[in-house]
Length: 212
Image (cartoon, rainbow, N blue to C red; front, side, top):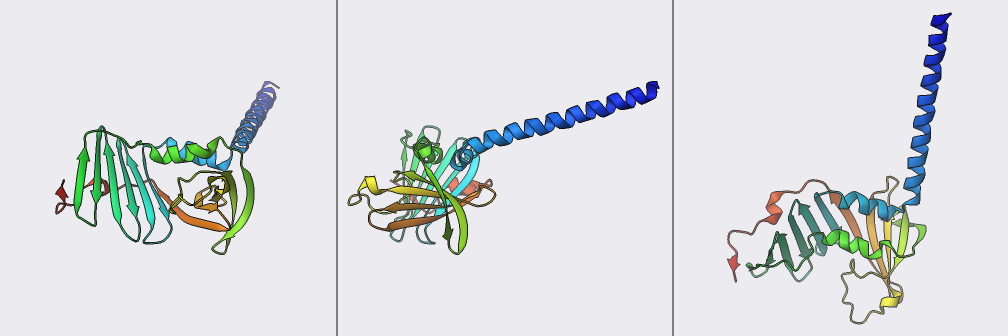
């Protein structure tokens, strides 16, 4: 009799544990649902001290932001130029690759968390959601008003009130594209790639470059 009672108590305890796990999982799921996808992305990347973020318009026009500990690099490529800004502690190095020159400043005018600052600019704004095909594949997106941080175009002739930014996510909630819409049916699309591996070489200065 006592043996049966112990078995029954064990079964009850097991049921209680399973139900508890289901309830906790349900609560966590609801909490995650309350966060929009861009917020989840932001929380994820802001919690890392090492990442490589690439926003690519094409092979000639792209921006690469790398962070590793207290070092940050901003690599800008365009059809006309290639520049690199390296921030480490209180020192900023600016490299002009086309001229093979670099400048060192004993001050930090660039925010080391510049990438998260870009996303933070739109996080608290009202947004809409939708779906759209990009390069033949359907993605969910969140659209926010304003923000020029992801634009390559010159802003002088653009009415800021017309600007909207769409962040596209795949089924795993990975950020895969950013589209900026502005003016009369104008748009810029960036393909996004994110890696947790950062090669130390991206923080270096080529040996044949001259300091100015």
